[in-house]
Length: 153
Image (tube, rainbow, N blue to C red; front, side, top):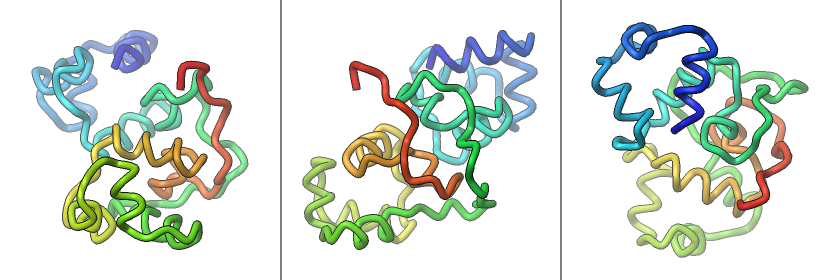
C-alpha cells in the first residue's frame, strides 16, 4: 500500500510512531507498507479514520482522499458489514455472490454471519460489483454512490 507510506510521510510520522498509534508493532506495520501482509478490516478502518480518508482511497479504488462528506458517519465498532443487506436488496442469493468472489456459498456465508473476516480485496470486488463504496459496505457512510473510480478499475 504505497498510499499508506505517502500518508504517513505527509504527517511526518515514522513507521514506529504510526504503529504505536494503531496499536501494533513497527514490523507488522512495515509489512503493510511493503504489501507483504494483508491489512485486516479493523486496521484499515483505524488507518482511514486516523488519516481522515476513505477506505476506497486507501484501497486504490479512487484518487479522492476525502471521506464521504454528505453522510451520517455510522459508528461501527462491531465490524458489522452490509453484505447481507445489499445482497438481499439486489435480489441475489449467497451462491450468486460466492460465484462473483470465486468461492463456495458456505465460505461466503461465513462473511455474512461474521464468522470470518472478509479480506479487503474481496470487499473491493464486491464494491465494484454492487457499484458502491467499500466505506458503504463497512457502514462507515450511508452514501451508496462511490466516488469516481480510477480508470484501470
